Length: 178
Image (tube, rainbow, N blue to C red):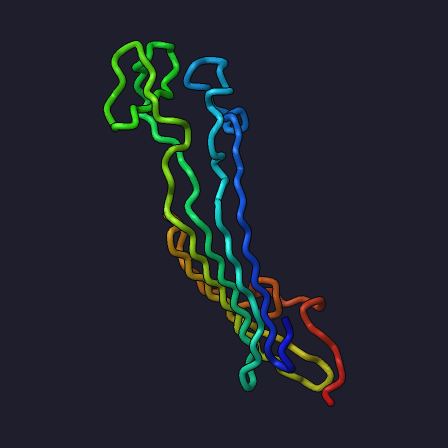
């Protein structure tokens, strides 16, 4: 939605459900060949997703934030590669109670029963237009913050024209300096 000059935003929400039978995970079924019993939430399933983006002109700068929030993705809970049901495949799962199943039996916890942390990503791009005669240059500074992403790090980056710090003729907008 555009609000006069210098302010525009867009927001979106997605409610989804992705279910599979485990075949795409390149893993074996708990009971060999019985993929029907493996039907559960798929690994990339994130039930709720929300995104907000916009552009705000503030004096000489343009701020362009993108805020993404998503619910946690499922993960599989196993008993650490131990073959309790004696089928020569080390993918056994525990019981709902958390106890190990008796030797020769499978646990009753379904595939992908765990739920990981939610996702929060905030990207901010700050740009300023610089006019050098007939040439217009738009260097920018990008900052990303992630919460709920183990192993991911925040980063800041100077973007001189949109190519990660590299200059190119395509990066320069040529126009009149009027």
